[in-house]
Length: 332
Ligand SMILES: NC(=O)c1ccc[n+]([C@@H]2O[C@H](COP(=O)([O-])OP(=O)(O)OC[C@H]3O[C@@H](n4cnc5c(N)ncnc54)[C@H](O)[C@@H]3O)[C@@H](O)[C@H]2O)c1
Image (cartoon, rainbow, N blue to C red; front, side, top):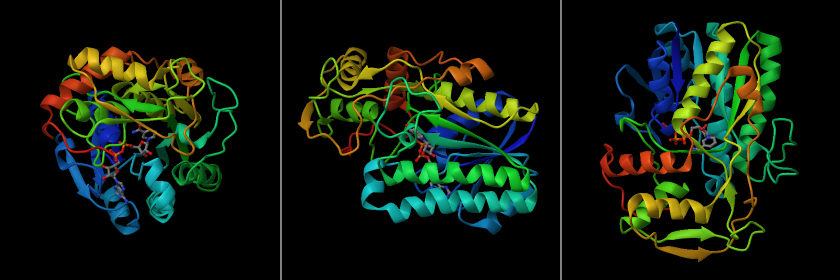
């Protein structure tokens, strides 16, 4: 078992990955500047409070904790924000990852698992999309992730690194034991925003209701955060067993519309979700659906918790009882 530096491990997906890594027997050290993450999400173990652009601090952490593997979740993640503030996105996501790579090369840490995104694909030519689908991001967030994906093969060849990339679709849900869940501020994701609306916050905005989909709202592929965490453990095992690095979609291949998600939230909470109609957002494709055959066939991964009802139920439990309290503020 290995010492794993989880960069961004105080955030939503990184913190769930820490749980899964510990359960698989790894030692976890979280490295995070807590800009969008939470100290309370670091459940035991070490938290190094540092910025991913701080090469010296990263090198110190890699050396001090005898790190063998890096999992890199730290990023700015809002598509809309990236359109108005691309500097911040390139600095955090591209410059940040280059700093981390420099630190790894200097210290001699050779394995990384990287959080990428379906946003690298842009508008689908076909659906579901496999990993070979053309990559044409529609915003600075997707571009920043693709730019760094493109740098990886050069680092792998020149410095003997192994870097696997996981392109997540819509991360959702919460730990089944209620230890962790999603806490973003402002919240931009559909399910927690629907809960906020139920709890008296701003009505849920539906961006576009005239798409060419069965009910007119966008279709998305929701994958449970616990299934995502499991994907990381499997990728790590594969690399440590001598497997090749790769790029993997992580989604379910099933699409739910925004309306269907709202209906599920209403069923689970027993309350109506107040909604308002808003114009389409620029660059929002009508449908985003993953073909995840590669990770299923090569690594035996299956989305076993990603049924929509389980996603919404786990997220609702967390929303009511988690350490963040019930968030009722207005959501982006
Ligand atoms: N949430 C999703 O649906 C989704 C979908 C696709 C890809 N992703 C990717 O997954 C990763 C994690 O997303 P998340 O939803 O957990 O986000 P999050 O905001 O909850 O977590 C990101 C973490 O990184 C930390 N961080 C940010 N900038 C940093 C910096 N400069 N130095 C050190 N730490 C920094 C934050 O404090 C936070 O703890 C991101 O790379 C994101 O692009 C997320």
